[in-house]
Image (tube, rainbow, N blue to C red; front, top):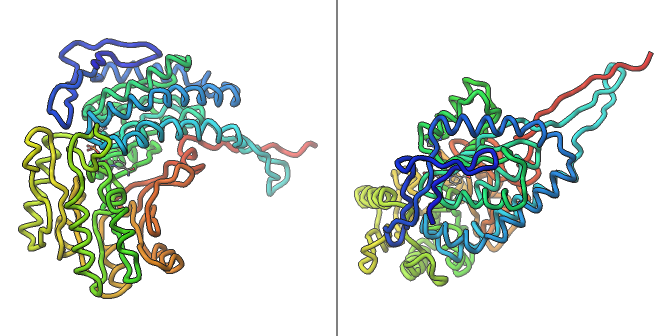
Length: 478
Ligand code: NAD
């Protein structure tokens, strides 16, 4: 399982043994494998390789580039089942979720952009206001630094690699050390299909080397997914450099339950909407806003369902909640549970390490009722299986509570009247929202408002950040 070499310029570059990181299995706390971490000098080599590859890759005939990318997507897909299991072992994601998110979605995203670029006009001629014409050209923006977190490592990387490579950019992918092993699957696939050297480079690294990549003079654009704190810092650095950046950051989304909702339907979908990947999901609806008229009914039903979730080995197909990614993350979540207790909220289930799971970084799925929306457990991203239920009196108050958040990434409205759901969804300050469910859609833009980020990924909009425009004015013939 060891991956002791980086992938730079189409080749494996070994690093000294002490430059490797231990990747530990979340459910057993045993060593899963050792992965190479890049030094500052390795980052320099990766950026240099991406720069050398940029002009030929960007100039390649689009049909040929699209064909190569489709084959790359196929090669990623062929490894999907194995990759999904690897990620589950790295970060604790239940295999039933991982098969879709890490096994299928990455290839779908890359394949989608391979198809999209064939249909996109890369230039058009517009009659100029003052006579003559303007040729408007879309060009690749250049070398992309793609920085990804550990929670959905494959899909989030593919959401950057796909549009970037399709646009004609080259990529330096910097995955998180906690899930460094799975990232090299993209290198295996690139080698198999013969992607030109330097088009994609894979250099897991820690903070300092990652910071070097962000400010590297050879980088033209940064695509970051991760925490709001780090995103803010990266945004500042890119602002100073006037370097384009997209930021996909944290969330604390609300599920607004209207009094006419189907409670049975809501709780059936709750594990997916609010607790996916053990709560380690940026758009999870971890705040549940319930009408006072049905409040105790909601608290009971949510508590019952969460209490009954199957916690265990993420590789078991029946497991609904696995361990958290690390001891640090588990302790962070338990600290939030303590804060919740101190806040006066009512713990209705969970809040402890499961008795039969002494090994692995498990936390019992947890529900707090009677949560004041100003409490830290309602305002801060916990990133674990902890839900807050808060009562509201009328629709306006529900919207005020939903919007009383630093974040604006996901959300849901639950009602038997979809038109009413749509009207309410329009009033929530968020980048994405669902009526009676939530689904991240490959064909539609995904991203946040407020402290949840800047810019969008996915859909046709997701390729725009990887393009720059050039207008060439052509004077009328004399
Ligand atoms: P993180 O911010 O700690 O790390 C994300 C990545 O940034 C990692 O690769 C890390 O090594 C790197 N990094 C850290 N400091 C850096 C620096 N100074 N310069 C460059 N790179 C640096 O986040 P995390 O803990 O890995 O992931 C969890 C967070 O990601 C949560 O807040 C979650 O909401 C967010 N997230 C957001 C989305 C989204 O699409 N909006 C999706 C998934 C996760």
